Length: 454
Image: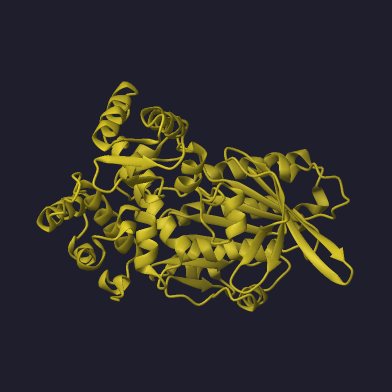
């Protein structure tokens, strides 16, 4: 099998976009009559049009035609991309780039208008497909186009919504028919989770947030075409991981730093109680690679300078020196550097543990006001914040850190004889629906895996 990533000059974005363009062309040329065969010339023309519309070169996608045009996965963009790019690109990265491409095609940021349209169009599809879960594709397109016109939404939103349904395998063609089949009512929450979630590859954790992963905002870069159209979207998110010593908070946050960087983003890590070398060793010990062609690790006495002067493409993990200054000066120093992140779509700042900065002045109302103002500015700049907080399970649970956070993960430790078992529970998830259950967490090779405790 041809290494399709190499065909696309090593660009994961180009590879995923080409595969999705191919899948759209497959849908356009689906033979609607029993026994009919797809005309390859029509497919090539449709593919060229799709690729040209996306501003991409259609040559790489054409390589797919011979081998994949008659395969059922060709109708499901995400499955198709994961199949073609394995094992060169992890499935969670393929999912991220696929959903990012769909968001860009629809100019969708996580906003009240986008959420309203997703819920409304899911309802429109469910009504159109009653009672057997299927409908003529042309009729479905007409219904959604009329709905978009009535809602004064862009004309391109309906095809993007259908592409999302197809990419996730919710919409499938009926063989030899012009109808499409939905196996179940279209779940709007599941669409939102996949479209705006940040897939981590931590299967159990991603499932707790609807299968698409915990929401971390992917901010458009100022230089991107149409970036100004994302005004009114929700800013970066604040995540708090709370639990006793040894419950896995640091390792979980570091895995997210790797995921962010490997997807082309930037993760600033302020590890106040571990050296950068210890953090990297912890990741390598569970099989999470910290050497990658897609990101670099920056540390040393002056990481700010090294970061600003870097010329390499791709993402980065930057280990910031621990702050010895008062917390107010630390906040000011970080605030002055937020603009350094503008060229990265995914942006994450990790403070581990936040107790080390706030311990001595936990009740200071003025400090809390400054922290809140800093978080608001960072979120407005599209920066996601991850705070680790050490707290015994018997300690008072309500805290300032929980109040200012959008998502709160509570990690715990249970002893069964001489064996230790970790567990994880989502106790707060603002603006994203989550499963209310406590899951067992195992630290093992490649992932911090979360599995149901029943």
